[in-house]
Image (cartoon, rainbow, N blue to C red; front, side, top):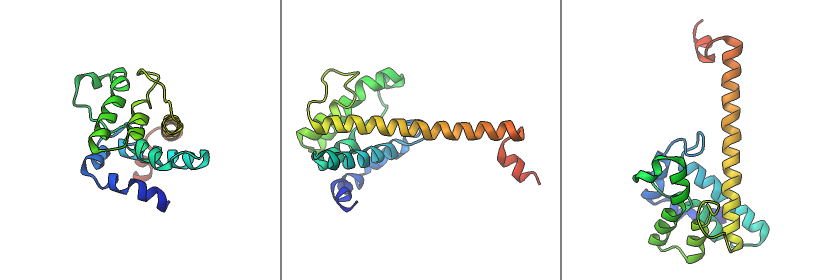
Length: 165
């Protein structure tokens, strides 16, 4: 993972990127930084496997959800889906990211915005985001099922049962 770290360390040291950790429940139970970092790792490995530019994929995936809900259109799910890729792309461009990184970010929600991904790297970022989203969902659903099973079996929360003695 040394190569991955060399591609992303400068971004991860930035306070504005670290601020993504404050946004809880981005996808189910993960914060936005955890989701973005996981997406970047998946994109990095996919890029290496598919012989794409791993640096572009890792950086674009790390920055793909770099936006904050300060605006009215983000208070509903559809508004966030439509606009966040455009805002995140503009933020990345403001950092001086190369055009391929910005384009991969802009098109990672291509189902909601105009313009399908046109490069191998942009498709990889889209796929990595969806793989990570599904993984987050399965983990969250598993936690939900375990919590419900404990409640069903014990009739109260598991912690209450273990601390009652």
